[in-house]
Amino acid sequence: MASPQLIPSHSSFNHQASINPNSSNPFLSNPNLKPIANPSSLLQWRKFQRFSSLRCSASSFPEKHRMNSAKSDDVVELPLFPLPLVLFPGAVLPLQIFEFRYRIMMHTLLHTDLRFGVIYSDAETGISGVGCVGEIVRHERLADDRFFLICKGQERFRITDLVRTKPYLVAEVDWLEDRPSVDDEDLEGLANEVESCMKDVIRLSNRLNGKLEKEVKDLRKNHFPTPFSFFVGSTFEGAPREQQALLELECTAARLKREKETLRNTLNYLSAASALKYVFPSS
Image (tube, rainbow, N blue to C red; front, top):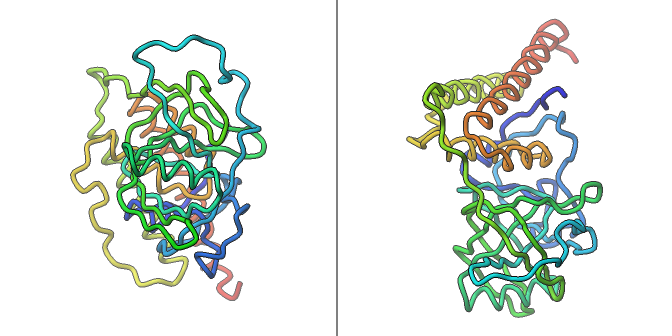
């Protein structure tokens, strides 16, 4: 299957996740709004200035994760927040919490360890089996008991069993880490190639949108290949299924290679669009 064509979102270069980019009022957004699910859609450059109101349901939780095994003493339990987006380690996620069961979750978290599991969910595929821990780094409680949160992605996890569904989902999880790289994998070189592709996509996209061309700054910012691969994945907003596939990979090299292919496809698309614009400037 061909890789999607994407333009890395400008907002994600600041490690911010855009949930509801089309809302003019950040606090009156549509609670059922979901990100663009078509991976081939081009994404506009935008700076995140919005919170999102989101609902989710436990009814689509896969049967394979239902309660079916005895607990052990070293089981890790994590409250889950299914959302129509993918959180990556290191990325920042603003949220507005207004649904009653998740307000209950927030009251509990604010008196414990401030961590919960963000898991991608949509109407077609249900809830994914791999997610990312979101840690609350800033919060504001309003008079009507809603919450504004700023969360940061931490480690990844895989769901092994469902502990309960009410008032909100709680699951047993295993932590997920990338396998050590083999000796013949040049992760630094691969990460540099991905960064170069990102810069080319940014330049060409700016040119197509009539923006002044200026030098693209350092995107890696001294990140090691693994966290950089998560950063790149977080920029592919509007293609959550592709992001989920990247999140689930347990090999940094494989993730970087897939991201490089996606960026190259995007660059080819933008090059063709640029040529058409030059030939037919009026259109």
